[in-house]
Every structure is written in structure tokens, then in C-alpha cells.
Image 1 (cartoon, one colour):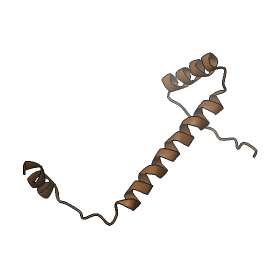
Image 2 (image 1 turned 180 degrees about the horizontal axis):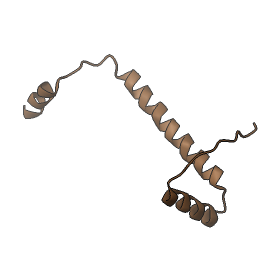
Image 3 (image 1 turned 30 degrees about the vertical axis):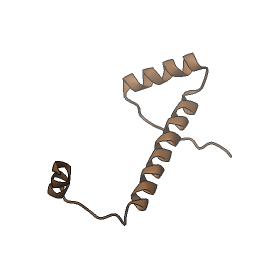
Image 4 (image 1 turned 120 degrees about the vertical axis):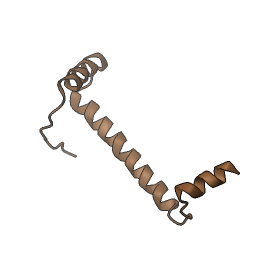
Length: 71
């Protein structure tokens, strides 16, 4: 699979941190960013799966939840 090129603008502090991390870890900034984005997307996918699993559960209002907690 070939990589795709994209221009991304980072906050200067994030840019500096990425450069330091790349230097200390002997990895490229692209590798670090790709890994971070992949992890974030995987987390989103897990969240969506949980929402799907729980979609049939009854919905409680905030007041009902407080009443249940008080019992």
C-alpha cells in the first residue's frame, strides 16, 4: 500500500513535541501521527459498537436516574 500525502497544520507546541518524540524514538513524525490517528479511529469504532449494542436498552431521564440512585 502506498502512502498518501497531506498537509496538516500543527500548533507550534505540538509540532515541537512531535519532533522531539520522533527524534528520541527513532521514528518519523508520519509514523507517530499515523499511529495516533489509527488509535483514535479504533476508539471511535469501539464507541460506536457499544452504542449499537446498547440501543435497545430503555432510556432513563436524568430525574429517573437520580431516583434510582437514591433507592
